[in-house]
Image 1: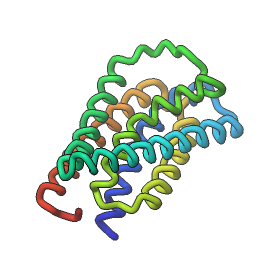
Image 2: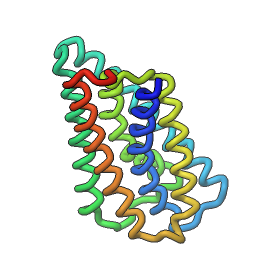
Image 3: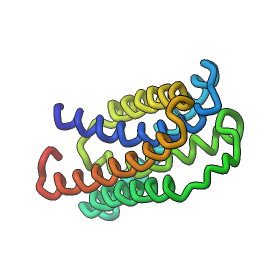
Image 4: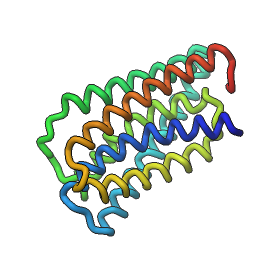
Amino acid sequence: MGAAALKIAVVALSLALDVFAVSVGVGMRGAEIALRIRIGAAFATAEIAMTLAGVLIGKVAGTYLGAAAAYLGFTALVLVGAYMIYETRHDDAGGGFDLSRGWGLFLGALSISLDSLGIGFSILFIGVPLAVSLLCIGVASIVSTTLGLTLGKALGKRAEESAGVWAGIVLIATGLGFATLHYFHVGM
């Protein structure tokens, strides 16, 4: 279970960094405890739901693509990571909508959980138990949201941008690492 625990931790961390980045931005406006709970619950729910959707897509793809589906899943991680870096570097900080309630919260939770779709797709091929993975992803999302909201004002805009880039780098490294391990049949 040691290798599986490490894999789960890496996946949960990569997702948590993205959630942290968004939460820092929201936290710069200040956040009361009720708001932290609402945003944390929304982000964790979105992360878990999109991971499950990715698992379902991965199962269908695995049925039709066989062994190539694993590499497609790992490629998805790399592409999502690259997109996260691009998005962080090219995002206009225009603050288009309020991420603390209503449609803004829904769209914010949806946007940060898109990477979970790729994670869900690849979870089937990295040998981690799904229920434990979902629990870890949910807990990591709640913790990173709380930390991001709490520390957002103190950390400022620079930390938000840096966290988004690091989240992308971790996802790229995760995808490449899992593909290498799968190719050499190590821990899979």
